[in-house]
Length: 200
Image (cartoon, rainbow, N blue to C red; front, side, top):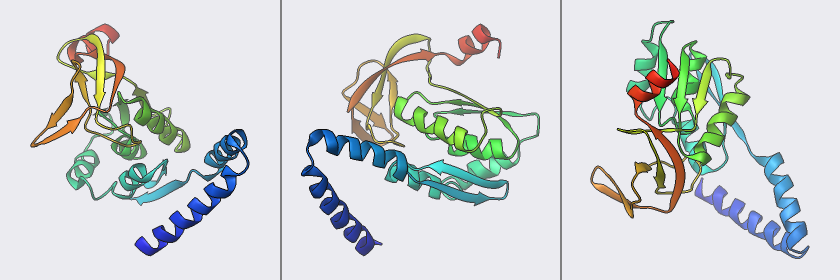
């Protein structure tokens, strides 16, 4: 795999150097068109059918590839849902467990505050034709309802380890500490107020 990646990196560097010769505008135009054409989707076979993922980067690809193995207890838990149950996927990221539950026929409410991941979540819902089963919202849950910042440890698509609330310099997660790379404006709701306000 590392040899293939090395060859790919050299090839991409060569292509990039050639495109550079065409000027900034032409380079931007060519790369923009390439992004539209080259972004891969990757399908994972599950016992409920294939689930496709829009893999815009290495981390979304990894999340797709480890759908069934990263948290097998979560998969087992979702498989135990009754048909009338609804999954609330809080911090849905790119939607791995939302998509799995929806393919199983379970209604899903997905909540993902990161705008980058929310884009991928919606793309994954779209390419799997699950917009009638999954209702995804770009909000954060918190102990109180307020406008604040989503303190992001990374702007990488499919990234995690974010924290809603006060302006922080570091995010503590277990024994690890992450520097805040970006502060994204966000609305946070307490779950009780969200349920009462919208009658869910």
